[in-house]
Image (cartoon, rainbow, N blue to C red; front, side, top):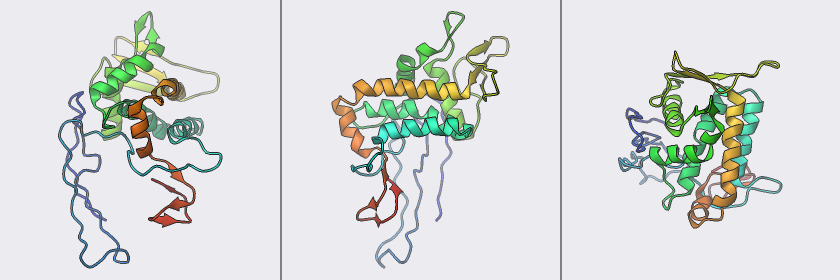
Length: 240
């Protein structure tokens, strides 16, 4: 497999970021390709709104006996990785939740930085108040999300803070939602951050899943197929 990647940036709130896989050329194994089939790069996505809902792939189907509906399953997995102490993965999985939820509300299933910040400000930000003032806004979280996902940094591209520091659970000590005004820093309990985001999303979901846009986008959300996905793969559990 080979790929060509363009430079990524998160310079604004309009979703002009990438590449999220744009331009990747995927080689097809000889055993499954015909002699006339060729491998070509994907055409670039439109410059505006190019951030698609995370994992807007696959087809409609049934998760399997005893499994959660696909969106709730994602939220539950975020809880599980947080409890398992996989905090890098926890942060990445948590920070994209506003992307997914905001995109599920749109007619085409796509989202932007402005929709991300608006969703966060409405559903999560009220949980973050320090000394009577908002301590974590949609702009703060969007800047953090861009820095974390594209560069592996916790130095937000925008917002009020130069650093956001996540505190791991340590015995009975809990440090959460403390603002260091002098150093323009915020510390947050990493597990509580994941819980706050997931619970906010679950509360949002109760009303959102009744809307036409959500229902139209839902069949495209990733899910687990325990017995494969015809006509592609049979007999093995897949995510698609």
